[in-house]
Image (cartoon, rainbow, N blue to C red; front, side, top):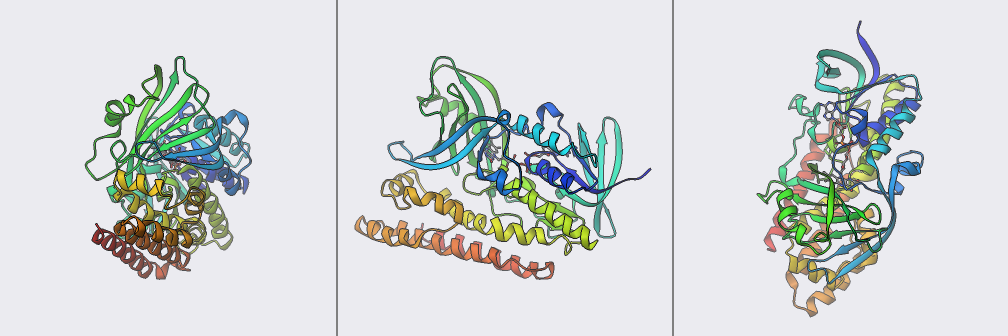
Length: 454
Ligand SMILES: Cc1cc2nc3c(=O)[nH]c(=O)nc-3n(C[C@H](O)[C@H](O)[C@H](O)COP(=O)(O)OP(=O)(O)OC[C@H]3O[C@@H](n4cnc5c(N)ncnc54)[C@H](O)[C@@H]3O)c2cc1C
């Protein structure tokens, strides 16, 4: 008998589970697959930090206390050398990913229209007459075919389905390794040390320890910490696990006696979102769609939001009985205009940050070129306040750093251009190629201009 559903979800990490929760509630007949078992659901290694606004903005209920390890009140950002520190206030959580995943899955399973297959590996998409019509799955030793009007690709960085789509489809868009971070983290438990200010998470900028990324120290209790680092991919930098053991363990915070509870690493995308999150009969969300914040690498909240928009787009497509690229296009409009525009601007900022030396970062923070109170504005809007540039002009001219000023001006200009390009994301798929050309040109122009300034 043919196994036919309204929607198939491949991958039940943060993005896929949120999509499942919404689609289940909307009454769709859904089949969802993940190769993990329930005990390791959402088991990808992570810093586990989540802004409190993210669940709400993705239409989810507030997470129950049992899914939260710690609450966060502020983030401290340290310049190289650690003499200069910014404190940025904001509410958040350190979540227990497995508990969060199980809770949300349990909520989705209250609806009888949902079937979940764990320990099930999605092997490839099924394509017929130029559109995705289902997936091939291995469950135990059986290989089976499942069919649906729409497949949700949420298999994370592995992109198990997307990587097997025809190469000429715009949704098949491989990632440049330089647009990735390779991250490694340990969860440690101190033997006899209590963390000061356990509700403040810390980010350390240091190109020698974490080139093209940062290292973090996120307390999950008075004695437990999630600590790790991410380095830019494709640059030939040493692997982060090696750096952790050779350099980070010498830091005063980590040389105190502790035991490692768990340790693991994984890659993540750190670029603007995919040019399109939609193909015929398929949508892509979360890490598989490159929806991570390019600057800080947080991807859970953005995966949640992409999933929320995907569920809305699927509902609209269902009402029109149109599961083509055009029929699902509203996901692109909602995501690109709602979040992608900011992320495209932050992709410009990320490229700038990755080129800075330790001396320039320290200097910029010490002189408050982007002041503490503007960090939140820049990260949530994707813009550098114009008054910041005006102030930087005075500071940098006085201190004879014209190179840094010139770069900052280019960055602010291109952040604005990138944001505007995404705000003008095409209304329908026919204009996509032209738009992609424009965006690629803009990013190449930025790279050339910033390289010119050294
Ligand atoms: C070390 C590290 C630290 C991070 N820290 C943070 C942080 O503090 N805050 C934050 O918000 N983000 C953080 N991120 C990013 C965050 O972890 C991801 O953005 C997020 O997990 C993406 O969710 P997802 O559902 O798209 O993908 P994933 O979490 O990767 O989930 C994908 C799911 O698909 C399943 N799957 C894959 N292939 C198949 C297949 N063939 N068949 C069946 N199932 C399959 C996997 O088992 C998995 O369950 C960090 C990432 C790393 C690597």
